[in-house]
Length: 91
Image (tube, rainbow, N blue to C red):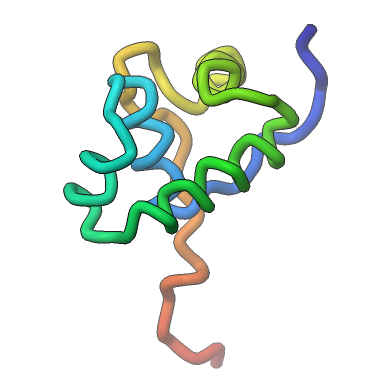
């Protein structure tokens, strides 16, 4: 069942994890390619499942595709929210 909930703002690393999940990557491969720990990958996946209100990674990918966030091939469609990575000061 689809809801009218707003799409979550994704950080670049979250978009990468979603993309890699859609392409069938395992946690160890994601961690290695993204140069982050396996535990951080698990944390990101858990947080994404909570934000998308799903219980499994398969449901997460399905919901992200249905909401137009990623394509079935793993391509990220929506712009990623990078404000947490900005280092500039407001004027």
